Image (cartoon, rainbow, N blue to C red):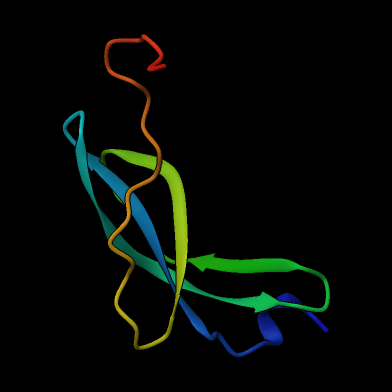
Length: 81
């Protein structure tokens, strides 16, 4: 069965950075989870123009996007111990 024969079960959101510390998740397409093969299939029909980090999250259709941000690099370049 081709990947696009499945009905989408999730909304895809792409993280768009706004400045150095902040950003937001923007709706960018749909997807579904293939539990049999342990894969996530994402079909993006649009993406952020600026600040796209490559981070994509899937949320069940009808549910709001999560209130999380992807990990960021330490700004001063030093590790915390």
